Amino acid sequence: MRVAVFSTKSYDKTYIDAANAGHHQLVYLESRLDETTVSTVAGAEAVSVFVNDVLDARVIALLSERQVKLIALRCAGFNNVDLEAARLHGITVARVPEYSPHSVAEHAVALMLSLNRKIHRASARVREGNFSLEGLMGFDLYGKTIGLIGTGKIGLCVTKIMAGFGCRILAFDPVPNQQCIEAGARYVSLQELLRNSDIISLHCPLTPQTHHLIDEHAIAVMKAGVMLINISRGAVIDTRAIIQGLKSGVIGSLGLDVYEEEENLFFRDLSSTVIHDDVFARLLTFPNVIITGHQAFFTHEALTEIANTTIANISAYEQTGNASYPVSSDRIV
Ligand code: NAD
Image (cartoon, rainbow, N blue to C red; front, side, top):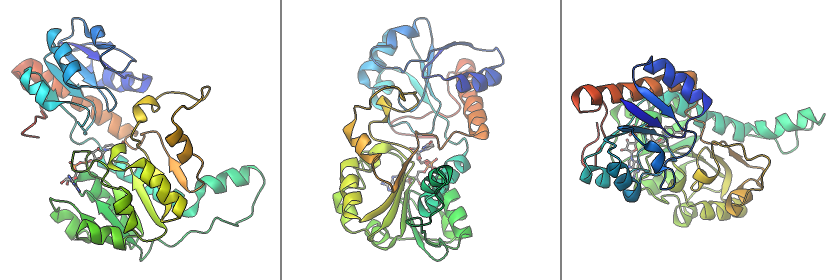
């Protein structure tokens, strides 16, 4: 099958080529798929895309005009795809439902530990010959309360890791996970979680219900000095409200791997240019904020699994007309 593979970096090509083993005809494109690049799919029956490609109703209609039959996401989240438009045009959407929840969970915990013990600042100081400890004090994780919003595959991994630290774990999820309960989590209301947590970590998908879930009202009930971690999707938090929370001190520290407007920034080297996003630039000025550029998934194991599952989805579609892991507006496998 001929597949236009968008948003590809050198590392994607390495892993996808290994998984494909020459079977499908893959056309690698560095550009993001959106209305301006859709013409580059010429002749492809399938497109493979990542988190910041734009697959709204307009792009899907243009893909359909060009006879594209399959959208193979190389990620778990599918908030960037208009599933209803895909259904109307008879385009199958497939995803990688699970690649390595450990990779993402471990990155969330890396942000927690770095923020708490101020590793980013300590490392910079020591390089300058400054061995002062002023301002670097952290707290024991043991005995602290962590609130997890979303307890699916990644939330379960975080639950187990934080239980190992001796944390008390509060959880909020419309679909409680028995394995999290067995690992020590206690399900509570969102309000109770927000009120009682020393650390709040987000592991839910971006949906209309979770858009700006953490806004000024949510921040208003949080404990003063709370640590907030978002590695789910940027728009689950209202960034402007978070900046106010950081300024007032209610949010004591913030770790982000995702950002609402990340599609204009992440996955590119912009180090020689001026950042035009003033909200993002403001976030970078806080000493108690660490931002990584959507790298939580970025481990050898995860890239191997993403490539294998993406090729499996394409091969299954080619052979049977159905992907291995389809996602649709009414049913998710
Ligand atoms: P999952 O589907 O296994 O779990 C998601 C959980 O969120 C489910 O239990 C679901 O019931 C819950 N949920 C849904 N709506 C909710 C709400 N309103 N409030 C609270 N919980 C809610 O997904 P997962 O594999 O654990 O991934 C979670 C999210 O993490 C993905 O949707 C994706 O956005 C994000 N993610 C980020 C990266 C990264 O590199 N930063 C990588 C993978 C996934």
